[in-house]
Image 1 (cartoon, one colour):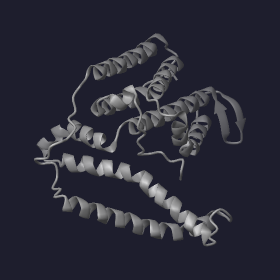
Image 2 (tube, helix red, strand yellow):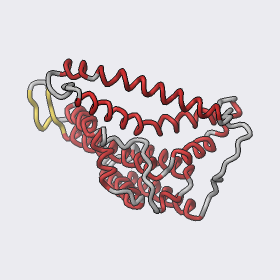
Image 3 (cartoon, one colour):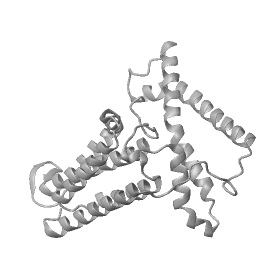
Image 4 (tube, helix red, strand yellow):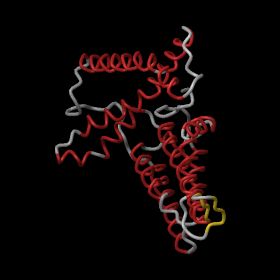
Length: 269
């Protein structure tokens, strides 16, 4: 539970922390699309180096990123194995219905690196952007949807509150599990069915605590006369700076580099 870093904000004095959150969200979307458009090892390596550069510029300790990767390492391994055994072409190893091909090896490598880059970029966004800034940025980016009568402010608020309460609920889960273990509960021995049954005394108080927190938050917002985004002002206004323009230029350079490498190197996987 302590290794889950989703939704956590790490305060630091870095270039990424000072960037406009709108630029960071748009750049994240562009990078996600770009990572899945790398079709050879050169373009993939170029995109991966760019992601590592962003991680280093964030000035967030590497152990925080490693914690975010530790949670999904099982998913990465399973996905890579599935791509490894389901490749097409002449097999280099075969046993019964299991066969390994060069195409499967290439697919496994690409999928593994792409998922890792995706997690690192998402973690960099949440580590360097506070929930309040995320709410403002999402609302500004989705502002054109107001023409379709879509409650943009409420959607952005719900997304940010959900992201913000992930570490809080994880901490609450850790406390409940520790309390149950102190009362003699055994959650680590036995088969899978016994372990799932042992989690029932944890899930019930966790749901009760989650609903209580949601009710308290709703009462607090109502007491402060919260009624949506109409007519609301912001203490912190978002303005584009020179560093934001340089960030956009950096993103465009990375996109151009990946496109050129895909064109010049024709060994498409």
